[in-house]
Length: 429
Image (cartoon, rainbow, N blue to C red):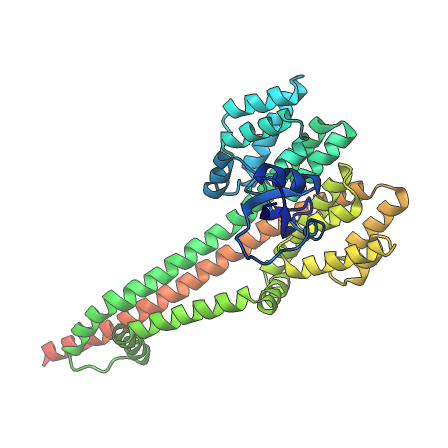
């Protein structure tokens, strides 16, 4: 019997590779599906190839592409991951269609014709085909991981099991909109200092490379002693003009070294720790990650996702490694029978306010409510912190720009005064 090698993904997202004997490729696909896996690729094994793991062993990991239709695979490769606001709009549209009384397949068919920026119509078309074939929508979405995250899939699955899919979709849309709003506030707060910094660098570069050499030619034609600041600036300009390539190489080397450092596990962790403790921006980063943690975990629990699964998904959502490690240890402790508040307190990462409110939520039986209240609190504090940060950065940047421009003008005006005095004295003689 022919042997087929395959790659597949488990519901948890783990990738598996293995081999099995089947009459043909269709039979191999059927066997893989019966194992509870999502096939990504199934190919006839080459003659003499070493046998791979047995199907049972393969059930330890998975991915998801070759079982998808060709059009969907091409779409997944070409389309970017949708933004949060785009995902929120898509989810809201679907929830509204279902709330109007449409059957799921009809609603998905309508989504094909509705304009959803960032999410191609092929996504809804494939979802409709999968649901029409008898699969649940959460399983159909699991076959499109580039569009739908584990958070999205598990919340939809919880909504299907509880019979409240419309309510879950609306909560999820609100969740994504809140996250998008927070991201936009953080981005807006960083745009101004970034633009002013780029403008300052541009002014200095223009002055050093173009303006100052012309003043140097003027001053060199007169027998006058230049002030120390002017000589220093002219020396720096001469070095930049002569060794600009060395400066460029140093900048490139610094960028490469930083990327290597940040791509290593230890380096990335140190950067994440520094971000949480950095002056000025550290408080904003802490409020952002704590609010994201509370909002994500609270939303998952509120929609019926089990605690361990919710912690695992929240760990995947978080980008700060220090927070991810703390969540992983929390999940291990909860698996051993501890309450949620205990490992959160032991991690020394999460603030005491979060620990206390989670403990109260456990005592009252409303952990999701406590986490959502925390998220509201942190998001409100984040809004205030961003406004204060912007108000603080603006005068600092203005003063810095004034000092830089003032120094450049001083370096030019001082020799100009000396030159005028020299010309006046020469004329008087």
